[in-house]
Amino acid sequence: MADRVAIIGVGHTQFRATSPGVSYKELMFEAATRAYADAGVDPRRDIDSFVCCSEDFNEGTGIFDEYVPDQLGAALRPVHTIAGDGLQGLIAAYMQILTGAFEVVAVEAHSKASNILTPHHVLALALDPAFVRPLGANPGFVAGLEMSRYLAESGTTREQCAEVVAKNRTNALFNEAAAYGADLEAEDVLAAEPTFSPLGRLDMSAPADGAVVVVLASEARAEALAADAVWILGAGWCTDSPALDSRQWGTAAYARLAAQQAYRLAGIASPSREIDFAEVDDTFSYKELQHLEALGIFRAGEAGLATAEGLTLLDGEFPVNPSGGSLGVGYLGEANGLQKMVEVVRQLRGEAGQRQIPDVEVGLAQSWRGVPTATGAVVVVGRE
Image (cartoon, rainbow, N blue to C red):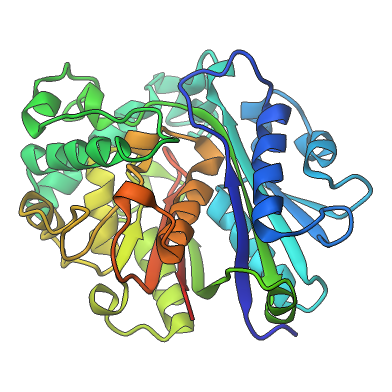
């Protein structure tokens, strides 16, 4: 069995609101080519297994893994499909290597959101078919309800949620791949038209197209390839109740339990002190705050105040979503988690350009699969 697993290569496309000139296959090929060049590998010779993250409903194609080998260089090779977020796929690849069966594994996730005309109809299929779906409620309505509950329980304010949006959209201005960078103030967010109260239009991440590929390797292969490796220290994942009427609404139990598992493997006792920065899910503005509290970075009810005081800015005590997050980069569906991991890797390598955080050694990536699920994953990585 492998002792340690490293991330040795990352690649991604530009993230754009629409990409009418390219297919999802072309997006995947571009991201894969960049990742393989970064890792210094030839997929036909060096990669033993491939993990692709996709949901048939979003793709419009059944058994979607049949359509991915060619553009990844995976023809006639093992391909493992995860109907889940890219961070879940990365953990699956991590475990494949730990078994000793594979030495190098590539993970891919993508979004062609601009091809989906009615995404809320797709998401509605995940709602309970007998008691919830017949109500015809847009899944955004579920997020609005959860936000109301979170604000009431935590004491967080709409103004503090607006600070999250302003921070992330501003961070995205320094990310050349982001689709939605903007110079916003909290007042602009609060003035935007309401959608699913208390959510406003700018509190919700907008969809984007793009693809991400990450290459993982065993310790022996990483050393042989002389890769600029970032090591996986711990990983965890969790699914809370799928039913809306039997889950915790005010807190993100799935993130808390996934983090506990990751911290245990990484030997982390105090995440706010031992982790230098984080990329966390911010599909909605309140989610960043809820997730930070679930991860133990801030105590319950304190993430909003910390954000308002500037602690999560690029030059703050604990930077959060330096890439711009989903609010700034764009909502990438199953690729959300991998995009966050790419940013963590680039920060640890010192490759983040104008948004580079100085002297970082350990970073965290966290994902949530989105409404109406209660599924999330956490991965902690470090330079050593």
